Length: 112
Length: 111
Image 1 (cartoon, each protein chain N blue to C red):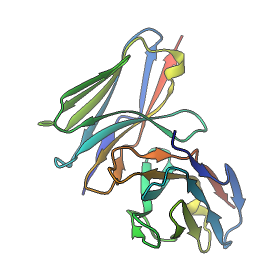
Image 2 (cartoon, chains in turn blue, orange; image 1 turned 90 degrees about the horizontal axis):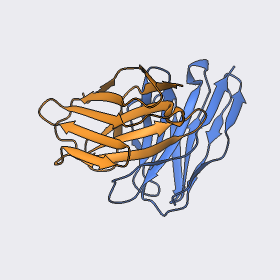
Image 3 (spheres, each protein chain N blue to C red; image 1 turned 90 degrees about the vertical axis):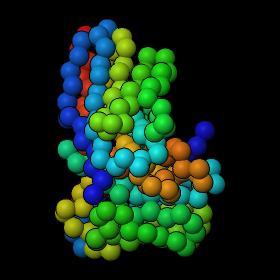
């Protein structure tokens, strides 16, 4: 079975801190995604990547950046965390055929 | 732009059937998906349907797709308390695996 692992289940950070959210998948998937989930809004795509060192903006990239130095790892970076970035962050991956998206368990980030 | 809409809440009694509805806007979608999210967990793929199909059945789950009306539904037969979760509808609107998700429907199953 595909495993998508997010390094932290819960994180509490202060406004202005630089925050790294890490995601690793073990199925040699080409595609990786970062979503945020907020009540009543569903999931919104922040950034995605189709290959190593490649990234594309999703629907809400402002305030975020990403890094994909290795195929299995996709990092989401909050350069200067703000309270409106308090949310559940979900990482996902899929293979070349793109039929199925597999999700990690999520990181609940609180910015105080 | 592309949009996926779902009602936010559904409450049923144990043993009844549940029907969760979804509408989408992009007629070029290749696949449509149903994901389940249990409390404190990530999203788990329940089932998906290719856009050239109109029905798919998998044990207690039945997916119906009406392409003309851009309407997708998930029927859960004999709903159990373990089915209580948030259900997300999603469409793949172009190549590359990007999905557009609905807001999620919170299903509450009462004994």
